[in-house]
Length: 195
Ligand code: SF4
Ligand code: SF4
Image (tube, rainbow, N blue to C red; front, side, top):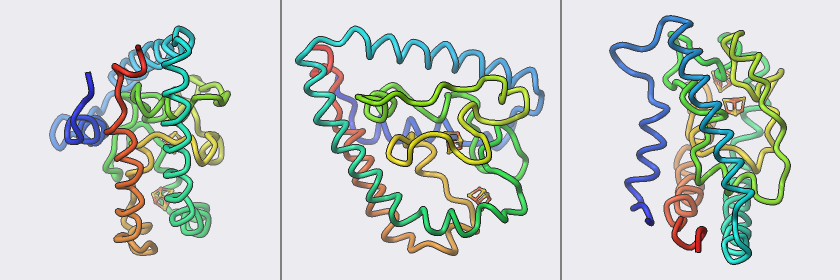
């Protein structure tokens, strides 16, 4: 059941990619995607509840590695985010749909897929998604900034950098740190989790 590196990371990337043609323009389509991603997110929570002790022990080790890799990455990017995002002329990039953004986040709550959700969520109570925000064209975790703890972000959100951020950051270092996060996600074994 283990996905290969290209399978999992690329699937996450592609899922968030804005469609070049046919980018969803109607609010009905966006809310439809949100409704499906909400159901999926709720099913992720169920997986957490049914794990056996061996699976939990495996998840615990992998989750520690994920959080460490994410925090190492956040140490590189958060100073720039704190500097430029509050004065961003585009408002927030955590909107579900916007013509000037390169990602589309309505297909998953908080950008999470099952594996990065489990890794980010293990042993933590994440803030509850506020689905009313979807009707304001915003991610369910957004409220004057991301409400998720810095170490518990999805790989999709961690991989997004607008041009302004790219100019501020040492992208070679960012890529190195991102690789470490991807390595944990790609190396995760669902077979070991469900043992
Ligand atoms: S990441 Fe870029 S687009 Fe998003 S709020 Fe910050 S400056 Fe604006
Ligand atoms: S999870 Fe956080 S960073 Fe990602 S889109 Fe939502 S508010 Fe933005």
